[in-house]
Image 1 (cartoon, rainbow, N blue to C red):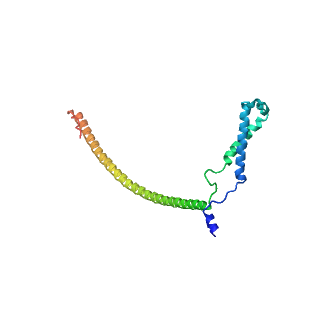
Image 2 (spheres, helix red, strand yellow; image 1 turned 45 degrees about the horizontal axis):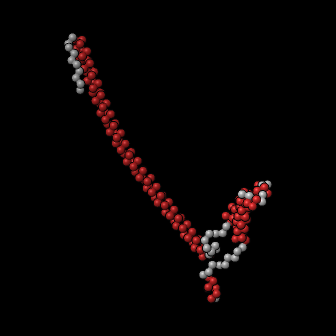
Image 3 (cartoon, rainbow, N blue to C red; image 1 turned 90 degrees about the vertical axis):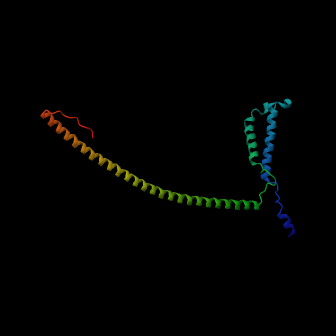
Length: 184
């Protein structure tokens, strides 16, 4: 019992396996190939490595690039430990669950507020349209009243012009002087 409690706080043993060995081997091979390419390029030791690798380099250079890239991407995790505690996974899942539920609740609240705002805006638009129609109707009646007043005034002026014209024709036929019409 006491041994189990002591082990509970410790991280579980991580034995090196193939998952940690492969990136290290790829990295080491990549470094060795880079050293061979460097030695060949500068003809270190005058051993003619450049001429020896000339034909094979067409395959070795891409092989080196693949090994280097694979070593980088398959490398171990950064930080100490390297293992994930199940408590951390559980805590992360709980946090994700809480965050998701809060986001959904907030989205529902925003949707409901947006719906209320939308409905109130529709009602306000209808009220404003009704007020605008009342104003338009009052303006139409006012304009129609002015038009009717102008028609009556026009008819009166036409009658005055006809009367003056008849009198002017009668006076000119009788030889009397015609007086100019006065503006009404």
